[in-house]
Length: 134
Image (cartoon, rainbow, N blue to C red; front, top):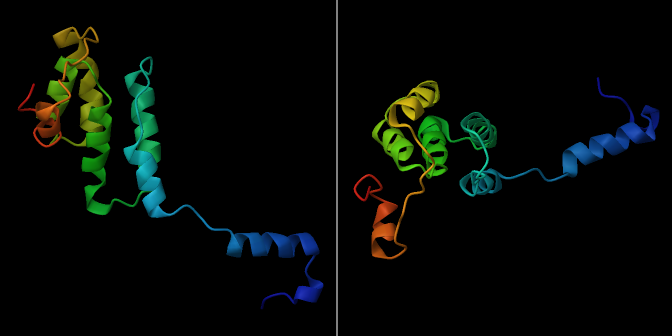
């Protein structure tokens, strides 16, 4: 049975009111934060993956969670060889991509060459067909 307000300490009542009436982050806000994540230049693969995963946890993507996670993760890489590999293997689960990424870096000897997009028409199409323009 719930306690009477007269018997409840004032601090406990304040906590109850805060819990009830403090607005939480909306799903839309959480997804906006997720979509606007950017990989830092000096950030390694593991910390980028952890940051993307933690941002996606509360987004409630449902069945599309793995796909959204992979697309955001891939978007952080500027190394052309690594980017191509990740795009070609988009069908693999996210955990499998993370396991294979070190092998790919060794195989292709990725040296962090930045991709060179022209920011005109082809970049606009590249949003929809990124593998086509690589």
